[in-house]
Image 1 (cartoon, rainbow over the protein chains, first blue to last red):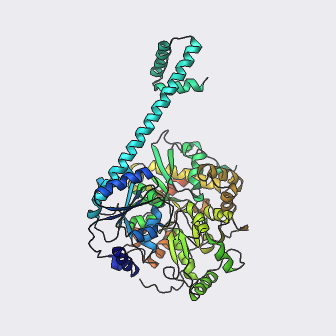
Image 2: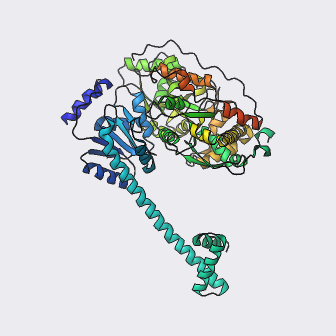
Image 3: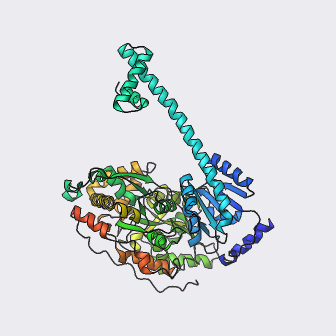
Amino acid sequence: MLRRRRRARRIASGPRCLQPRARSITLRVLLVDSDLERAAAVQAGLAATGCVVVAIAAGTEELTRHVRDTGADVIVCGLDDPSRDELEGMRALHRDEPRPVVLFAERAEPDQIEAALAAGVAAYVVEGMAPARVRPVIEVAIRRFRAHQALRVELAEARQGLEDRKLVDQAKALLMQRHRLTEPEAYQRLRRMAMDRGLRLPVIAAQIMDNI
Amino acid sequence: MPLDTQAPARPMLRRPVLRTLRLGFVPLTDAAPLLIAQELGLFDAVGLRVTLSAEASWAAVRDKLAFGALDAAHLLGPMPIALAAGLTGVKAQVAVAAGLGANGNTITLSNALAQELGRCKPPLAAAAFAALVRRRAQQGRRPLTLAVVFPFSSHNYLLRHWLAMGGLDPDCDLRLTVVPPPMVAQRLLDGAIDGFCAGEPWGSHAAALGAGRIALSSGDIWPNHPEKVLCFSTEQVRQDPESAIACTAAVIGAARWLDEPANQAEAVNILRRRAFPRLDRAEIASAFAGMAEGLPLAAPLRFRNATLPRRDQAAWWLGQMRRWGHLPAEVSDSTALAPWRQDLWRAAATRLRETEPPAPSPPPPSPDLPETTR
């Protein structure tokens, strides 16, 4: 509480006072994400590294106030989060607010930039924080975002697999009925058609179903 | 259809298949040249395969363009300057291939403010607004909050210029903030902001929702000001100039088509389908019709004459960035304006037999500033 009040006083007296930040022991992270599951995963990961994490849903409230009230050192959000422009506005438009800088900044390593982009992570460091101190936070965020991404891809693939099986079964049934084939014969014919045209089995099945 | 609004003729077909160009845009009315070029098959006609991705923020567009996840994008006019100077922590060299429109933003104020200002037709005079701000300050009321869409935007600089024309200091007399365009109407309705400067259709949308009133358009501040630009990463231009030229030609073709009044209804339908499925047709149509609050605008959203990127016009953004202390003094004019090149436009225009558009109106002169304390 006291800490927050102190911080609020510093902010109130202008951005200059933010420059030599008091050496805080734990990093304060503001996590902005509307994907609740992902936010929970990132929050747990960061908490495990000893960060104080405040998570909020994106786009709901005024971000500037949250950044100020939480006294955040780092802000982590999705690369495609609509609230990013508001965060960037704080730097140029509010003289008396904390000034977050996007972490793709000069000092980030190219491999980290690439990893962040691929995982869909954007991070901001409030001016005055050394990027090196924030590195572990970003690494955790990247790992958790990536894991979440992989999970989603897996789920989508599983769903697609089911859909594909259903399509193939339907096409097989159609061939069996239309040409009086046994199930293995219908399957053989499907496979041959797929091989002849260089297409995957479900694609051929879909074409057959479309042309009923 | 007049001859020059048709899809580019056969001789343009140089190569049957170029590689796929990844183009990003932010859903706004002035992304129309890109959406129209795709819908009308103009990209196909020049042998280009294009994927268009709707992006949720200007920051995302910038990062993807700077780090190679996009080949080209719809960008705010001052953004190439910010990128060249590395202002947001991201430094990149981009090439402005074409302008995507002139005018097309509104300054929309809350109903409460509009009421305080009394009955007045747009455009609202800067002096009248400044008088209101001063009156409120004398009465000890809270300062007003106005939203723009990005710090390095035409919206921010045109709004600041207009405020300064009335004698206000935008950094002291009121509070400026950033709100993404799709959220401005709701924030105005909630009372989180007192007004905004944003691209269409969001001003018309706010007016239609009853969240506020359009007080003036950006064209009332600088008639026919350049708005968004089509930018390529210089890496893309270097590796495959042919695609950049072909893409620019398709966009010029779309701009020609868009300025034909007979095509506007179709343009509205396409935009609604591709970018604003939740908005009413009328909200999208008013920018094309050049109307605000039921009155015709002096300088409405137009496309064709804005396609030639002009460095002397971009210099106004640069001047404003210096004026408000947004650019370090050591960044030279030539570095900041290097992205504006005309070679891509000229190569594309030659193929379309597009003549150079007439010189636009000069930018507004800066008034004597209330000296800022920075």
